[in-house]
Length: 363
Image 1 (tube, rainbow, N blue to C red):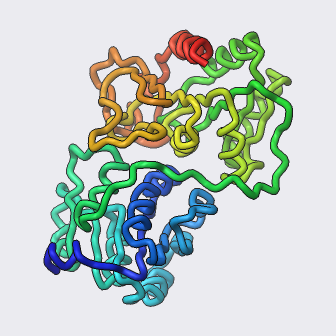
Image 2 (cartoon, rainbow, N blue to C red):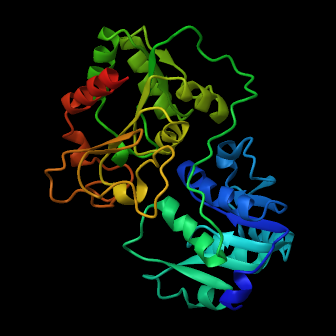
């Protein structure tokens, strides 16, 4: 497939494939918007994990969501491939994994995807994909990497993230609580977690400033346990962990005075709503994975790898950036998901409180 053929297509059916976490799904929405603007009459489907469907609820650029089988065996994955076979004019794999690439190859007449430059077995992907993009070790921000497919297709880039649609919410959100701040205490993995003592100091500070504190979190038993304990310590807290759908959570966050959270998909979501968002980062490289600022549109990453910084509505605090190892891009100091991270453990609450005071003054 030549570059000319790829850049002069008018597909009627498009499939975009993303396999990983909630944040990864949100970060493909600029690509979806770009595709819909370039091909307004095309039906755009997304193949993704069941747990991430809420991210695309009410998304105007998406025709339908198709889900990966939960913990698929060989047979269930083969059934998925058979159901996708040649159903699309264009299929795009937004990750380098074997599964997403195979889905793109099988589903699309034109198939695009990432290949990992560090992986010696990527030759078959390069051979079977119509065109591939090398995902190098020095990759840029995830949003910008996804938008490189626009350059392959010679279509304009749309940089704006699209959060879940909040126009038809059937859940009872907290009422008459303005002003309030949303705190997302628990990331999915321990190595991205800030110490609980820091959160306690923030809660006490915000209470003295007459802010209602609203906690958000997943329905994971450990999250519920820790957040319930915080609520017992501070009875004036509103705890919504595990009870709100993603669209309702989006509505809750979008009306807050500001949001504070770690390196997690919900922090990306908060930034996409446009409210002031304080992101607490440790091992992860902000240049690659910081929350995308609202209405930011530029070919360059909004953040550098080192240091606390601000761009648009996103205020990024990097845990103890005096450490030479930060950002290491590893899974904590012990290199596993349940590891501690010294940089976050040494982040003083005073730094976060001073930033909140600045935001309060500005607003």
